[in-house]
Each structure stands twice: as structure tokens, then as C-alpha cells.
Image (cartoon, rainbow, N blue to C red; front, top):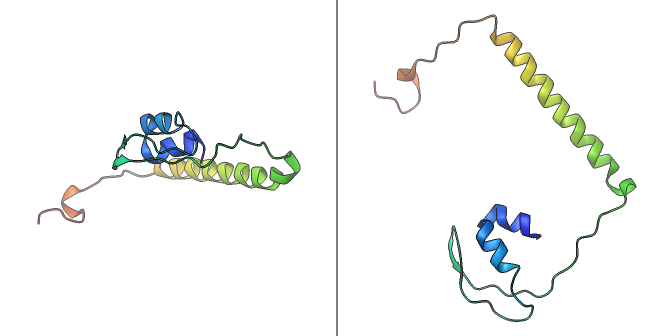
Amino acid sequence: KNETQLASIFGVDFAREAFRQDTHEWSEPIQSAYGWHLVWLDSIVSPVTPPLDEVADKIIARIRQDKEKAVLAERIETLKQGYDIIIDGSKQPGAAT
């Protein structure tokens, strides 16, 4: 994992400290949101940017997916304008009766 990915799981401070460690040595205990950890780095590999032709299909699919979500959200907002929406909290699951 890269530092950003590790930070999204264990927190920014943990990721920053983990990536400061030397390879092939145990770290001092490092705290995360989940507790304390000892970290062993086997190796640090420089990121590689894949050629566009290898990821083009994924990029196109993601753009289409994002556009579909945006269109759906816009349609829902348009439909909601034609209705009065009232949320009755007493009928929510777990609400007192």
C-alpha cells in the first residue's frame, strides 16, 4: 500500500510514521485508531504509473459511472420538487411507539 492508502485505513499519523521506518527492522510501537502496532517493512517500491492504454477502459468506465450517478441525483432532485416530503420520526425503525 502507499502512504495515502495506509492513512485511509490506520490514520495519517500512523502512515507517516510507518513510512519513516527503515526496511528489514522492526519499528517502535506505532499508534493507530485500532491500537498499537509493530511495523516491519520488507521493501519500499516506487510507484509506477501504468501506460494509458492499460487503464483507459477503467477510466472510461469510472467517468460513465460518475456521470450516471450525477444524472440520477439530478433526476431525483427534480422529482422531489413536485412533492411535499414529510419525515415522521415516530415511524422510523427503533422509534418509541
